[in-house]
Length: 327
Image (cartoon, rainbow, N blue to C red; front, top):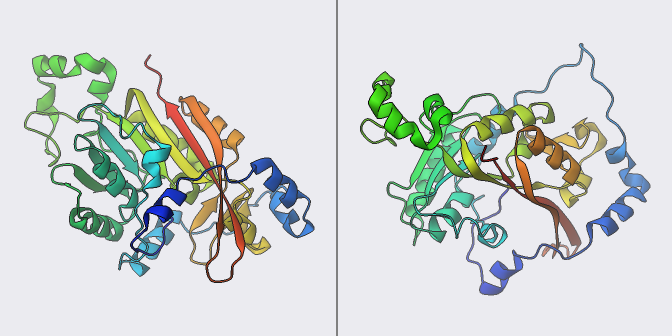
């Protein structure tokens, strides 16, 4: 959901993407809070009334966005992910990764490239963008995606994940589920056999790693927790959630005008797409309420320069790693 034009990157430019502590977030916070022109970003948002017209569903706006940008110009491989999340490189043999909100495949390509033993299951609310992701992934030089990339249509903001990812039986019995299900005839209850499953397989027995890269901020705050809980439901005990999203006081947040506020730290763009800006406390509270343990959580602060106008830009993202308890 956050991308740039596709181009050939030099080694220097690729390394520059790995910077994450170019400035101190507290210094940025002091600058913003001392600037009267930004005061409307800090004010509590007025409570809506029953007569207020609700905004259009965010998934519809994102579907329109992807239809407008179906050419793939917004594709830019996220090479920095492997530096920020070495767990992807060091994942166990035959690891199963779920990319939530895969967009055009910019995250998927990096994951598939890093290890030949990883299989990626990727969902998005837009059929158009899934088709584009499939095209990009399978046409990317140096990436073997055969039998390793499985995109599927799903609006994670309102739909449950399919049970072929992690069926109720396997969630209940854990590691013993395969033997128990064979003895009980459990596999016979499935009427349709998804292409990702082998014969007599009830499900893929859960996900090892979930990646949420600029996904959660694209849905309204009041349904974020329910969305997270749906994700956690298909994660194996001990599995990881790798999170990266917009942080409070990011340059793009400060560009929004007062009439674009639709909630506290929540904005709507001209095209109808949402954008929420996280504090560390908000992320901590959401993931804790979803039943996950915090492993890492920090602001990534990157300084860059606009090539067109020479202006200095301070970007802020939230970087987090969380784990599902083993018991």
